[in-house]
Image (cartoon, rainbow, N blue to C red; front, side, top):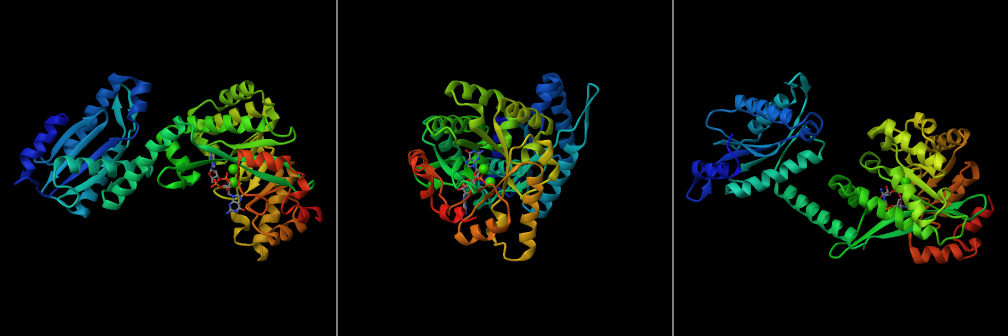
Length: 427
Ligand code: C2E
Ligand code: CA
Ligand code: CA
């Protein structure tokens, strides 16, 4: 197959008339698991695999179609004279199906899979370079949507991906320049009306877009491979702050499931605890059940190591996703945090009330502490706390997440001055 430069000149030579690309469709094909094959089975096997893949693509295509190996595991195909969405979809589906079939190389049976980006001239680009760039954008989306699929380029997609890439670069810079902030939200103990835990929540104030929601930039960090760095940054800052708080207050830090897969969370945490001189029981790690879905054995192993060290573990956002009850006794948990969605729509109807009550009772009967998230009104608090035995509550009623300085002031205050505390005392 021809290489990149030859390919671009070939497209220009055969398809450009009067400076404009003639109708054609471009497919950007990226093999999903090629790196793993190279890393585990070696380059010789990787090379043979690429030959088989190229052969399969050649069989699908007609002789006037152009095909090129574009990079390590990327192929680009141009089909002249065709810009029909249905036909393009058919071709993409056949390619994906063919590249999903196992390949036999040196007695290994390898299933590789592929993602495809598609764009069509002249609508999506009038030069080979434009079309290539847009096909690449479409590929980016196909990969982000979970691989083994295809995406057509559109202008909106182009804008979204452009913004996404811009945010990725800016977030990397914010991390290097240490301009991300960590805020803290207190959890209020309903028995004592005091605060024993504050949750660390990362904040990013973008120079042009203002505050970006952590949900979106955490996802970017996870997908772009710097969640380990971001996670360590938050852990370090949160622990440093906690070291300056009263001794009976611990800090809870969200640890992304991707961090568990990509890095050694246990060594990072134990190193930071040592460095900062914080006692392990003053750190609480918040994980969601996706940690179990991503790598069950590794996650249990790491969480047990942390728990043995004395670090507290809580299961976050319980009640969303699968909420498998078996996780409650397979993980070394201290706390379960019940997701805000349970009370967001009110617990006025008896079914949601019974559901919440049931989940809390079950969790308590396993000896775990229960936190209810997202309490915003006095009414919600009194409605729940009258009949349901919850240990801690967290929500805007008590306090929004606050900058480090303000949380220190709040922790220094007499705890009965907390908003909502008077209500708590009457429980
Ligand atoms: P989460 O772990 O469930 O954190 C609680 C979220 O609920 C926070 O949103 C908090 O501001 C919000 N919240 C608290 N009380 C109330 C309330 O009464 N009403 C409403 N409507 N919301 C309330 P935030 O800070 O936007 O964070 C969103 C999510 O982003 C977090 O959900 C967590 O999953 C993730 N996140 C935040 N910081 C970090 C971090 O440092 N690392 C990781 N891995 N994830 C983080
Ligand atoms: Ca959390
Ligand atoms: Ca939560």
